[in-house]
Image 1 (cartoon, one colour):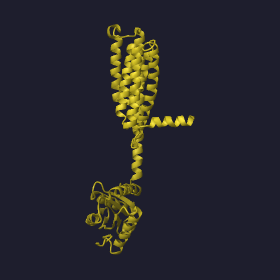
Image 2 (cartoon, one colour; image 1 turned 90 degrees about the vertical axis):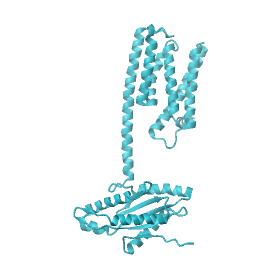
Image 3 (tube, helix red, strand yellow; image 1 turned 60 degrees about the horizontal axis):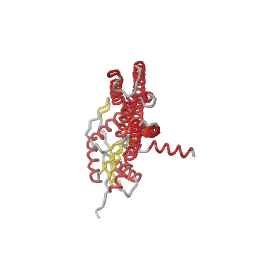
Image 4 (spheres, helix red, strand yellow; image 1 turned 180 degrees about the vertical axis):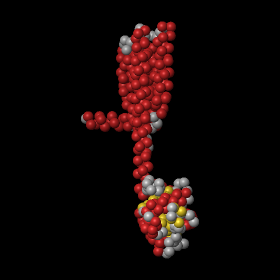
Length: 366
Protein backbone atom coordinates (compact mmCIF):
# COMPACT_ATOMS: atom_id res chain seq x y z
CA UNK A 1 0.00 0.00 0.00
CA UNK A 2 2.77 2.43 0.96
CA UNK A 3 4.65 1.56 -2.21
CA UNK A 4 1.56 2.34 -4.32
CA UNK A 5 1.00 5.70 -2.59
CA UNK A 6 4.69 6.57 -3.06
CA UNK A 7 4.52 5.66 -6.75
CA UNK A 8 1.41 7.79 -7.30
CA UNK A 9 2.94 10.71 -5.40
CA UNK A 10 6.10 10.63 -7.55
CA UNK A 11 3.98 10.31 -10.68
CA UNK A 12 1.97 13.38 -9.62
CA UNK A 13 5.10 15.46 -8.92
CA UNK A 14 6.66 14.49 -12.26
CA UNK A 15 3.53 15.07 -14.34
CA UNK A 16 3.98 17.60 -17.12
CA UNK A 17 7.77 17.26 -17.31
CA UNK A 18 8.78 17.16 -21.00
CA UNK A 19 11.42 14.69 -22.13
CA UNK A 20 13.77 17.46 -23.29
CA UNK A 21 13.63 19.37 -19.96
CA UNK A 22 16.96 19.96 -18.23
CA UNK A 23 17.63 19.30 -14.55
CA UNK A 24 16.68 22.80 -13.38
CA UNK A 25 13.37 22.79 -15.28
CA UNK A 26 12.52 19.32 -13.98
CA UNK A 27 13.21 20.41 -10.44
CA UNK A 28 11.14 23.58 -10.86
CA UNK A 29 8.14 21.69 -12.30
CA UNK A 30 8.27 19.13 -9.49
CA UNK A 31 8.32 21.89 -6.85
CA UNK A 32 5.40 23.72 -8.50
CA UNK A 33 3.37 20.49 -8.57
CA UNK A 34 4.23 19.79 -4.95
CA UNK A 35 3.46 23.34 -3.87
CA UNK A 36 0.16 23.22 -5.78
CA UNK A 37 -0.80 20.03 -3.93
CA UNK A 38 0.15 21.33 -0.47
CA UNK A 39 -1.14 24.86 -1.12
CA UNK A 40 -4.52 23.79 -2.50
CA UNK A 41 -5.00 21.26 0.29
CA UNK A 42 -4.12 23.68 3.10
CA UNK A 43 -6.09 26.63 1.73
CA UNK A 44 -9.09 24.39 1.05
CA UNK A 45 -9.10 23.03 4.61
CA UNK A 46 -8.56 26.46 6.11
CA UNK A 47 -11.24 27.90 3.83
CA UNK A 48 -13.75 25.30 4.99
CA UNK A 49 -12.89 26.10 8.59
CA UNK A 50 -13.41 29.81 7.88
CA UNK A 51 -16.84 28.99 6.44
CA UNK A 52 -17.73 27.07 9.60
CA UNK A 53 -16.69 30.08 11.70
CA UNK A 54 -18.77 32.47 9.52
CA UNK A 55 -15.63 34.28 8.34
CA UNK A 56 -16.98 34.41 4.78
CA UNK A 57 -14.51 36.85 3.24
CA UNK A 58 -11.51 34.84 4.44
CA UNK A 59 -13.20 31.63 3.30
CA UNK A 60 -13.77 33.03 -0.21
CA UNK A 61 -10.15 34.22 -0.49
CA UNK A 62 -8.76 30.87 0.68
CA UNK A 63 -11.02 28.87 -1.65
CA UNK A 64 -10.05 31.05 -4.64
CA UNK A 65 -6.38 30.45 -3.75
CA UNK A 66 -7.03 26.70 -3.61
CA UNK A 67 -8.58 26.79 -7.09
CA UNK A 68 -5.66 28.82 -8.52
CA UNK A 69 -3.09 26.41 -7.04
CA UNK A 70 -4.99 23.49 -8.57
CA UNK A 71 -5.16 25.26 -11.94
CA UNK A 72 -1.38 25.74 -11.85
CA UNK A 73 -0.90 21.97 -11.59
CA UNK A 74 -3.43 21.26 -14.36
CA UNK A 75 -1.75 23.85 -16.59
CA UNK A 76 1.60 22.09 -16.21
CA UNK A 77 0.07 18.66 -16.71
CA UNK A 78 -1.61 19.52 -20.00
CA UNK A 79 0.77 22.12 -21.45
CA UNK A 80 4.22 21.00 -20.11
CA UNK A 81 5.03 24.71 -19.66
CA UNK A 82 5.89 25.88 -16.18
CA UNK A 83 6.21 29.63 -16.89
CA UNK A 84 2.51 30.51 -16.61
CA UNK A 85 1.82 28.15 -13.67
CA UNK A 86 4.83 29.59 -11.82
CA UNK A 87 3.42 33.10 -12.23
CA UNK A 88 -0.04 31.92 -11.16
CA UNK A 89 1.35 30.39 -7.98
CA UNK A 90 3.60 33.36 -7.23
CA UNK A 91 0.99 36.09 -7.78
CA UNK A 92 -1.74 34.14 -6.02
CA UNK A 93 0.52 33.46 -3.04
CA UNK A 94 1.56 37.13 -2.89
CA UNK A 95 -2.05 38.35 -2.92
CA UNK A 96 -3.03 35.77 -0.33
CA UNK A 97 -0.18 36.83 1.97
CA UNK A 98 -1.12 40.49 1.47
CA UNK A 99 -4.68 39.70 2.42
CA UNK A 100 -3.50 37.86 5.55
CA UNK A 101 -1.47 40.94 6.54
CA UNK A 102 -4.58 43.06 6.03
CA UNK A 103 -7.07 40.78 7.75
CA UNK A 104 -4.86 39.07 10.31
CA UNK A 105 -6.31 35.69 9.39
CA UNK A 106 -7.61 33.62 12.26
CA UNK A 107 -6.87 35.14 15.68
CA UNK A 108 -4.30 37.50 14.09
CA UNK A 109 -2.04 34.55 13.16
CA UNK A 110 -2.02 35.39 9.44
CA UNK A 111 1.42 37.02 9.61
CA UNK A 112 2.96 33.67 10.56
CA UNK A 113 2.24 32.39 7.04
CA UNK A 114 3.95 35.34 5.31
CA UNK A 115 7.43 33.90 5.91
CA UNK A 116 6.89 31.24 3.23
CA UNK A 117 6.75 33.98 0.56
CA UNK A 118 10.50 34.81 0.20
CA UNK A 119 11.82 31.28 -0.53
CA UNK A 120 8.88 30.44 -2.81
CA UNK A 121 9.09 33.77 -4.70
CA UNK A 122 12.85 33.44 -5.22
CA UNK A 123 12.60 29.86 -6.40
CA UNK A 124 9.67 30.37 -8.77
CA UNK A 125 10.70 33.76 -10.13
CA UNK A 126 14.46 33.58 -9.84
CA UNK A 127 16.63 36.00 -7.91
CA UNK A 128 15.71 39.18 -9.83
CA UNK A 129 11.98 38.63 -10.45
CA UNK A 130 11.46 37.06 -7.05
CA UNK A 131 13.21 39.93 -5.28
CA UNK A 132 11.14 42.52 -7.16
CA UNK A 133 8.00 40.65 -6.11
CA UNK A 134 9.12 40.59 -2.47
CA UNK A 135 10.01 44.30 -2.48
CA UNK A 136 6.61 45.16 -3.95
CA UNK A 137 4.90 43.02 -1.32
CA UNK A 138 6.99 44.68 1.43
CA UNK A 139 6.05 48.17 0.24
CA UNK A 140 2.34 47.36 0.08
CA UNK A 141 2.44 45.64 3.46
CA UNK A 142 4.29 48.54 5.07
CA UNK A 143 1.79 50.96 3.55
CA UNK A 144 -1.13 49.00 5.03
CA UNK A 145 0.56 48.60 8.42
CA UNK A 146 1.62 52.23 8.89
CA UNK A 147 -0.71 54.43 6.84
CA UNK A 148 -2.52 56.60 9.40
CA UNK A 149 -1.50 54.20 12.13
CA UNK A 150 -2.99 51.22 10.33
CA UNK A 151 -6.42 52.74 9.73
CA UNK A 152 -6.77 50.75 6.49
CA UNK A 153 -6.23 47.45 8.30
CA UNK A 154 -8.95 45.06 9.38
CA UNK A 155 -6.54 43.55 11.94
CA UNK A 156 -5.05 45.37 14.89
CA UNK A 157 -1.31 44.99 15.53
CA UNK A 158 0.82 46.77 18.08
CA UNK A 159 3.64 48.99 16.84
CA UNK A 160 6.30 46.70 18.33
CA UNK A 161 4.70 43.68 16.65
CA UNK A 162 4.67 45.47 13.27
CA UNK A 163 8.33 46.46 13.61
CA UNK A 164 9.44 42.96 14.61
CA UNK A 165 7.43 41.43 11.80
CA UNK A 166 9.06 43.69 9.18
CA UNK A 167 12.59 43.14 10.54
CA UNK A 168 12.14 39.38 10.76
CA UNK A 169 10.60 39.28 7.25
CA UNK A 170 13.59 41.19 5.84
CA UNK A 171 15.93 38.79 7.65
CA UNK A 172 14.20 35.77 6.10
CA UNK A 173 14.30 37.51 2.71
CA UNK A 174 18.03 38.23 3.02
CA UNK A 175 18.83 34.64 3.99
CA UNK A 176 16.61 33.31 1.19
CA UNK A 177 18.41 35.55 -1.33
CA UNK A 178 21.79 34.29 -0.12
CA UNK A 179 20.60 30.70 -0.46
CA UNK A 180 19.08 31.23 -3.93
CA UNK A 181 22.22 33.01 -5.16
CA UNK A 182 24.53 30.26 -3.91
CA UNK A 183 22.21 27.54 -5.24
CA UNK A 184 22.05 29.16 -8.67
CA UNK A 185 25.82 29.71 -8.76
CA UNK A 186 26.44 26.09 -7.75
CA UNK A 187 24.02 24.83 -10.39
CA UNK A 188 25.65 26.92 -13.12
CA UNK A 189 29.12 25.72 -12.07
CA UNK A 190 28.00 22.09 -12.11
CA UNK A 191 26.25 22.60 -15.46
CA UNK A 192 29.39 24.19 -16.88
CA UNK A 193 31.49 21.23 -15.75
CA UNK A 194 28.91 18.81 -17.14
CA UNK A 195 28.90 20.58 -20.52
CA UNK A 196 32.69 20.59 -20.53
CA UNK A 197 32.93 16.86 -19.81
CA UNK A 198 30.21 16.10 -22.36
CA UNK A 199 32.13 18.06 -24.98
CA UNK A 200 35.33 16.24 -24.08
CA UNK A 201 33.52 12.91 -24.44
CA UNK A 202 32.42 13.87 -27.96
CA UNK A 203 35.61 15.57 -29.18
CA UNK A 204 38.94 14.29 -30.41
CA UNK A 205 41.55 15.89 -28.17
CA UNK A 206 44.19 16.28 -30.90
CA UNK A 207 42.20 17.75 -33.78
CA UNK A 208 39.17 19.24 -32.04
CA UNK A 209 36.90 17.35 -34.42
CA UNK A 210 34.11 15.02 -33.39
CA UNK A 211 35.37 11.63 -32.26
CA UNK A 212 34.23 8.20 -33.43
CA UNK A 213 31.54 7.92 -30.76
CA UNK A 214 29.95 11.27 -31.62
CA UNK A 215 30.06 10.51 -35.34
CA UNK A 216 28.24 7.20 -34.85
CA UNK A 217 25.54 8.92 -32.79
CA UNK A 218 25.02 11.55 -35.49
CA UNK A 219 24.97 8.96 -38.29
CA UNK A 220 22.33 7.00 -36.38
CA UNK A 221 20.18 10.14 -36.07
CA UNK A 222 20.52 10.85 -39.80
CA UNK A 223 19.84 7.20 -40.59
CA UNK A 224 16.55 7.45 -38.69
CA UNK A 225 15.73 10.57 -40.71
CA UNK A 226 16.39 8.98 -44.10
CA UNK A 227 14.25 6.02 -43.04
CA UNK A 228 11.37 8.43 -42.31
CA UNK A 229 11.80 10.73 -45.31
CA UNK A 230 13.44 8.40 -47.84
CA UNK A 231 16.25 10.96 -48.12
CA UNK A 232 19.92 10.51 -49.04
CA UNK A 233 23.09 10.38 -46.96
CA UNK A 234 26.67 9.85 -48.12
CA UNK A 235 29.91 9.04 -46.31
CA UNK A 236 33.54 9.82 -47.15
CA UNK A 237 36.25 7.74 -45.53
CA UNK A 238 39.59 9.55 -45.79
CA UNK A 239 43.10 8.31 -45.10
CA UNK A 240 46.39 10.25 -45.21
CA UNK A 241 48.75 8.80 -47.80
CA UNK A 242 52.09 7.48 -46.50
CA UNK A 243 51.47 8.93 -43.06
CA UNK A 244 53.78 6.39 -41.44
CA UNK A 245 56.72 7.86 -43.39
CA UNK A 246 55.90 11.30 -41.92
CA UNK A 247 55.93 9.94 -38.37
CA UNK A 248 59.07 7.89 -38.96
CA UNK A 249 60.97 10.58 -40.85
CA UNK A 250 59.95 13.71 -38.96
CA UNK A 251 58.64 12.49 -35.63
CA UNK A 252 55.18 12.02 -34.13
CA UNK A 253 54.95 15.69 -33.10
CA UNK A 254 55.13 16.73 -36.75
CA UNK A 255 52.64 14.00 -37.62
CA UNK A 256 50.21 15.36 -35.04
CA UNK A 257 50.53 18.89 -36.44
CA UNK A 258 49.89 17.57 -39.96
CA UNK A 259 46.69 15.91 -38.71
CA UNK A 260 45.62 19.18 -37.09
CA UNK A 261 46.15 21.05 -40.37
CA UNK A 262 44.21 18.40 -42.27
CA UNK A 263 41.37 18.62 -39.76
CA UNK A 264 41.08 22.38 -40.37
CA UNK A 265 41.12 21.94 -44.16
CA UNK A 266 38.36 19.32 -44.02
CA UNK A 267 36.22 21.27 -41.54
CA UNK A 268 36.54 24.52 -43.52
CA UNK A 269 35.48 22.98 -46.81
CA UNK A 270 32.22 21.25 -45.91
CA UNK A 271 28.76 22.67 -45.23
CA UNK A 272 27.59 23.76 -41.79
CA UNK A 273 25.28 20.76 -41.39
CA UNK A 274 27.91 18.25 -42.56
CA UNK A 275 30.13 16.60 -39.97
CA UNK A 276 33.77 15.50 -40.04
CA UNK A 277 35.28 13.27 -37.38
CA UNK A 278 38.63 11.74 -36.67
CA UNK A 279 37.80 8.11 -37.23
CA UNK A 280 41.05 6.71 -35.88
CA UNK A 281 44.78 7.26 -36.36
CA UNK A 282 45.17 9.12 -39.66
CA UNK A 283 41.63 8.31 -40.86
CA UNK A 284 38.75 10.82 -41.06
CA UNK A 285 35.08 10.21 -41.75
CA UNK A 286 32.82 12.85 -43.31
CA UNK A 287 29.02 12.60 -43.10
CA UNK A 288 27.08 14.44 -45.84
CA UNK A 289 23.32 14.60 -45.14
CA UNK A 290 20.92 15.20 -48.06
CA UNK A 291 23.73 14.30 -50.47
CA UNK A 292 23.59 11.64 -53.18
CA UNK A 293 26.58 9.67 -54.47
CA UNK A 294 27.51 12.00 -57.32
CA UNK A 295 27.33 15.08 -55.10
CA UNK A 296 29.47 13.28 -52.50
CA UNK A 297 32.07 12.44 -55.16
CA UNK A 298 32.22 16.13 -56.08
CA UNK A 299 32.82 17.04 -52.43
CA UNK A 300 35.51 14.35 -52.19
CA UNK A 301 37.30 15.69 -55.28
CA UNK A 302 37.17 19.18 -53.81
CA UNK A 303 38.71 18.02 -50.52
CA UNK A 304 41.35 15.99 -52.38
CA UNK A 305 42.46 19.06 -54.34
CA UNK A 306 42.38 21.36 -51.30
CA UNK A 307 44.70 19.06 -49.36
CA UNK A 308 47.04 18.44 -52.32
CA UNK A 309 47.43 22.18 -52.96
CA UNK A 310 47.98 23.11 -49.33
CA UNK A 311 51.49 24.15 -48.27
CA UNK A 312 52.45 22.11 -45.24
CA UNK A 313 55.25 24.06 -43.64
CA UNK A 314 55.81 22.85 -40.10
CA UNK A 315 59.27 23.50 -38.63
CA UNK A 316 61.62 21.44 -40.80
CA UNK A 317 58.76 19.62 -42.57
CA UNK A 318 58.33 20.81 -46.18
CA UNK A 319 56.47 18.43 -48.44
CA UNK A 320 53.16 17.73 -50.11
CA UNK A 321 50.55 15.70 -48.24
CA UNK A 322 47.84 13.83 -50.11
CA UNK A 323 44.80 11.83 -49.10
CA UNK A 324 42.80 8.95 -50.52
CA UNK A 325 39.00 8.83 -50.22
CA UNK A 326 36.39 6.10 -50.39
CA UNK A 327 32.83 7.28 -51.08
CA UNK A 328 29.53 5.50 -50.49
CA UNK A 329 25.86 6.40 -50.25
CA UNK A 330 23.87 5.08 -47.32
CA UNK A 331 20.42 3.79 -48.26
CA UNK A 332 17.63 2.94 -45.86
CA UNK A 333 17.76 -0.69 -47.02
CA UNK A 334 21.36 -1.00 -45.76
CA UNK A 335 22.95 -0.89 -42.33
CA UNK A 336 25.35 1.79 -41.13
CA UNK A 337 28.05 -0.82 -40.55
CA UNK A 338 27.81 -2.14 -44.10
CA UNK A 339 27.93 1.39 -45.54
CA UNK A 340 31.12 2.21 -43.61
CA UNK A 341 32.59 -1.12 -44.68
CA UNK A 342 31.90 -0.23 -48.35
CA UNK A 343 33.56 3.17 -47.89
CA UNK A 344 36.58 1.37 -46.43
CA UNK A 345 36.59 -0.99 -49.42
CA UNK A 346 36.70 1.93 -51.89
CA UNK A 347 39.34 3.66 -49.77
CA UNK A 348 41.49 0.53 -50.12
CA UNK A 349 40.95 0.62 -53.89
CA UNK A 350 42.10 4.26 -53.96
CA UNK A 351 45.24 3.26 -52.09
CA UNK A 352 45.94 0.33 -54.38
CA UNK A 353 45.41 2.38 -57.55
CA UNK A 354 48.13 4.90 -56.74
CA UNK A 355 46.80 7.05 -53.83
CA UNK A 356 45.63 10.68 -54.03
CA UNK A 357 42.44 9.36 -55.59
CA UNK A 358 38.70 9.13 -55.00
CA UNK A 359 37.08 5.73 -55.48
CA UNK A 360 33.37 5.03 -55.22
CA UNK A 361 30.66 2.60 -56.10
CA UNK A 362 29.83 2.68 -59.79
CA UNK A 363 26.07 2.36 -60.20
CA UNK A 364 25.14 0.88 -63.54
CA UNK A 365 22.25 2.67 -65.28
CA UNK A 366 19.05 0.67 -65.40
